[in-house]
Image (cartoon, rainbow, N blue to C red; front, side, top):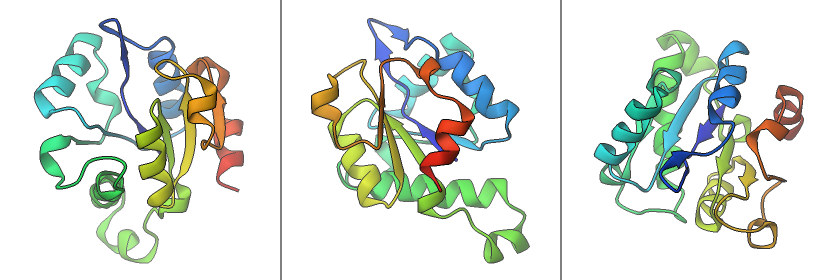
Length: 156
């Protein structure tokens, strides 16, 4: 399970997002967005980039009382994702747990929130350098550096 915080760089989706999301979809990984942006901004970005179909759940700033670094947004995202990706009976018996989630982030606050939620973390250095994102379990400069095997290893 991956929570992808969509990151823009100079008005563009960060490099490699489409291929990364395609790889996850091909491997049946449920995906969601948990963002500090408002829903109208998220929707515009997703529409322009034609990425909306990848995400089962979108949680925006309006849906939480406390933003990052509070874990509320990530925990709400997981709660909603569990309602969508699992049949009712399976959800009760086998919900997706926080330690089965990987948050891909580009900020220290997001990484802190993910850790507080009990989720695994990958940092992408498009906004901050690696030193500022050192709390992540894995740090990459591009999403193309990540494979399904890399992500599975984080959860084992």
